Image (cartoon, rainbow, N blue to C red; front, side, top):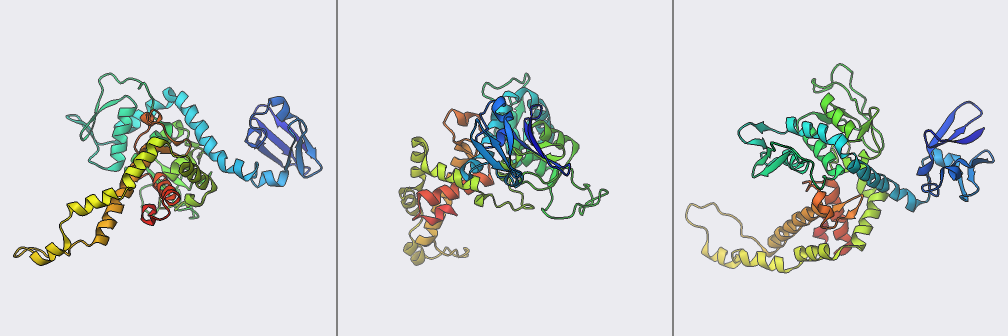
Amino acid sequence: MDAYYDYSSGRIVVEFENGSTFAVPGRSLEGLVDASEIDIADVELLGETGLHWENLDRDYEIAGLIAGIFGTPSFMTGSATRAMLLQNNKQAHDFAAWVRPVAEFFSYEVPYRREVGWEHYYMTAYEMGCAALVALGQANETVGGATPRRFPDRPEVPPRWDDISIAVIYVAAQNGQLRFRPLGRRVPSPKTDDRGDMPGTNIAAANGAGPARATFNTYWVLEALGLVHGGRWTNAAETVLWRDNPTEWNLDFASDARFIRAAFDAAADVPDDIRAEIDAIVTPVNEETWTMRTPDVEKSDKSGPPPDAETVPPATPGDLRGMADDSRCHRLNALFFRRWRLSDGWLSATEAQSALEIYHDALAISMRRAVMRWLYPSRPLLAL
C-alpha cells in the first residue's frame, strides 16, 4: 500500500495491495486548499487506514475520503459555492472563448423575422434569449425583443456566466433541444425514446444533476460553457440547474446544507438598500392602498349588480389581504432575481449590472421564501 501526490493531475493517489487505486484532488481537502505543492506532496500513510501531512498538521481517514468527506461540515457546505464562484471568475476571464458559440445558439434558437429582428412573444425563455443577446453585445433591446447590431461589440461589463448558462438551458428546453430524463429511470433504447423522436441520453447523471438528452448544437454550447464534460454534468452545473429545477428530477435543493447556509447568510446580512426595498414592499401601507382602491364591500352588496350583469362575489378583507400578499411575493421574487445569487449572496448595484433578471428562477424563489421566513416569522404568507 502506498500514497503519493501526482503533480501532473494535482491528485492524492492511494494504491492498495490488490492493485486498485483511489485518487482525490489535493486542493479539495480542508487545510490543503492554499497549501504549497511541496507541502501537499509531503503525504504519508498513517497506519493502513489514514493519510498524514506533517507540516500541515492534517490527518484524513481513507474511508472518509472515499465517502466524499473532505473536511468539517462548515467547509463541506461552502465547497460547492466556492466552486461556483471560482467557475464564475474563470468564465468571466474566458468570455471570448464562449461568447461566439453562445451568441450563435441564441441567434438561431430565438424566433427571428428579418423585418423586426428577434421576437420573444413574451415567453420567458425567449425573453431571456433576447436579453442575453443584448448583454452579449450582439443586439439592441426593443419592446418586443431585440434587433441585431450591425457591428457587434464586446460589452464593457460582460454578463454573468451563470445567468447566460441558465438562459441557454431555458431556450434549449423551450425548443425541445434539451430534454431531461427522470432520475432512476432505465435509459431508453438507442434507437428511440418514448416520444419517438429523440434517442436515449447523452448527458449522464452526475454531481447532483439527472440525465438528459441534448441535440448536437446544444451539447456543443453546454460544453463551451463548462456545464458538460465527457458526457456528464460538471460540478459547476449543479447549482445552475437548481435554478431551472426540472420537474423530471424534482430536486430537493432547499434541504441541501449549502442552500440552508446561504439562506442564513442572506437573512443575517441584508445590505441597507436591499433591506429598505424589502421593507417598502412588505409594509402594511401597501395593504391599506389595496383596500382604498377596492369598492366598499357593504356598498357593493346594497347597490347590487347592474341588470343582466354577471354576479361576482364581492371581495372580502381576507381576499384583499391575500391579493396584497400575492403581489408582495411577486415583487420580492423580482428583487431576488435581480440582486441575489447563490455564489455571491447579495449583489451590489454595480455587480447587478452584469446580471440578467432570470424570471421564474426556482432557486431565487426558494431563497425568497427562506429569507422571508427568517425576517418576518409573523408573516407566513410571505414565505409561500
